[in-house]
Image 1: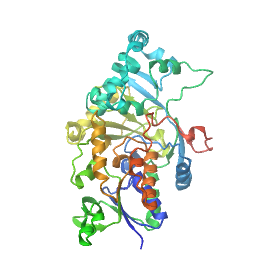
Image 2: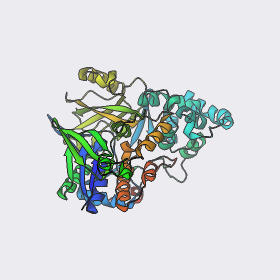
Image 3: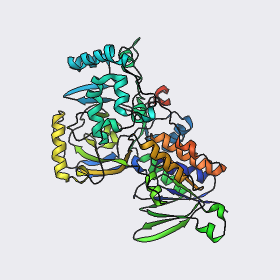
Image 4: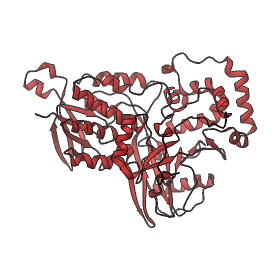
Length: 491
């Protein structure tokens, strides 16, 4: 008799786990709270006066160092997968800096005070500063200041980081810095700013793949394929309980007392229960902890997305712009058609602004008209003309960033220990492991969860630690070394 698998969440990890289980002949049911698949990687469609616009939940790109996963996506998407190159800038105090930094651009744009301060830090301060021995107990501000100096920290890191996370950077774990900043220190900055033999410093993967109709197209296609092969996907399912040890008590089998026998959920006002042999959880780790009677203390930083069609062909040539000024409400401004021209009607474009907040705070509840006025003020500050069509809408992501404060690692370990007592429960993916990871890593985690169950191996610790090396997570992509096919490139 085939085993019954219940997967919580139809995001990248959940769908990939379902694929692996389905290939092995298991019966799979996916329970998804939303009416769409893809989780944070979904794409929304907006029908405007000028035509159809598409907006992702954030800025997504498909990059990977895994050739098998890359081939899987190529085969899944075929001609619907475009090739693009990222162009980014930093906007700060009325100036625009290339990202990554380039020596000519920096010298032309940076104020003398900034350059002089960085030079003083490099020569007279940094050589005498002691770095913390343990990264796990150090904080973001300490990590930056002991590597890049106070001047760069105050100008490029402090205000942006405070706005993004809503806490003092000295309360933020150094893990965020180590996984997001590929440069080693200020000396490394200087070395990389001076290119050798015309080379450009590689601080992140520039080339990437992107679906024609938005990042979510990958997951709608995968979901359609799974359903055609017999996988059940229940959309709009609100999970209310994980029933523990019911069958063990009934059969007097104490070896299975710590197991999940059934998942209860509400759908269209009715309560349903589905029996299971194994549960794969890709929904937020703190949520599953609460469903099993444990308060992890782990929290998330939320995002509100402001999406607005623009009656112009291009706002800029940038994929996104980092908005470092603390007084600007957003942290990134993105132009979706920079990834794919099909994200907006011909001759039109759109902008999407990521606005960090906490669920229930003033920004989360801000009236749309008030938010529109605020956004237009910020766009004017950035020198972007008011050429909107008059249409806009906002969306929310409650679980955008796992709150990586200085205490999060200890809380996460306690949560892992609690959940690992349930022998047939495997947590995986970005939300399920409370990790800031990219899509390809979440997909790999989903495959690992399925493989462990299929082989009868407990690989949960390996899943939690997968690609957790102390290095920047977006430096390399195997696509950087591949030739782009003709006719499939978009800038």
